[in-house]
Image (cartoon, rainbow, N blue to C red; front, side, top):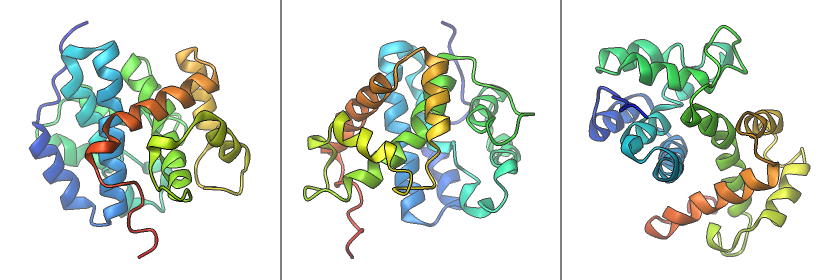
Length: 202
């Protein structure tokens, strides 16, 4: 595979994220998706792990400021990323994860884009399920528990089950495989961070 250039270092990407996101939940979600993407990059595209990570970190750059305009999601982010030195490849990858909102945006083609599409919403569902557990840790979470939450449309109702299904289909994976591998991805970095939803009871 060719080397992909994000046009900015991780530190600069985080500064950009922090300039437009002030809710700790949004920062945590961005970092969760970043680390999930890095996990999959190490298997599928190790030479581009940094690029995958920055895509994950900035995928929702404009959501906090424009969450009332889902069809414009990632379009507001585009000039911000470009002004910060982001490359067309970075912009395209980020835009592809919202092609379900706006059919004019590029559809996922690269493995990286398909994994972002399939797992981004799923990390949110897993995070929401984990904070309901006594341990508040993903380390003792499993596919069986996730499937129950996935089937309960009232739980984390803002998480699109259809997007997760579409992402699995793009990847050619069964839902159980997407569930298992995303849980494994989140378990791979959870021990190095506070437990998910640590502020849920505060």
